[in-house]
Length: 147
Image 1 (cartoon, rainbow, N blue to C red):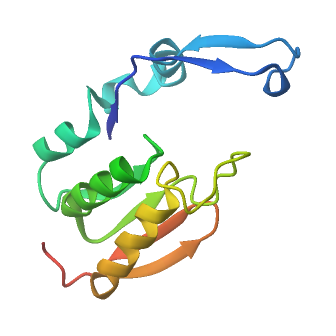
Image 2 (cartoon, rainbow, N blue to C red):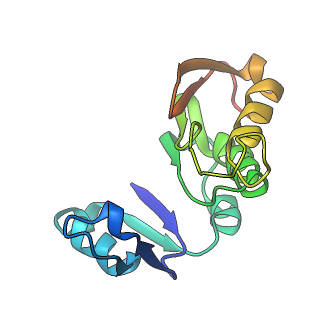
């Protein structure tokens, strides 16, 4: 498994999402290390911008790619195109946060992942099969596509 993330930001969690109703700030790198400790020998962690690191991965080598990083359309579209190249024919590509709901932010806004996912699905329609579309969107790269 390869995991790509910046791991350079502290994540602020508002009080309404914590169990004790007090806001908190967490170190995402420490949380990731703690949560994956028992699998450490099976995870290839790549710290850095996904747009750079995805370009370093082997084409058609991954069975599954899960995109849940930056939420603006520009980065989501770039990650999608690059991730599609590393997914094996017949492999799966899954996006999170398609139905992400942020008060005051339209799903049509370029600060939202939806426009990028919709654009990718439209442009790559002949190369993929839609497996699921809800809060997450999952596609399968057609087996005959070796891109």
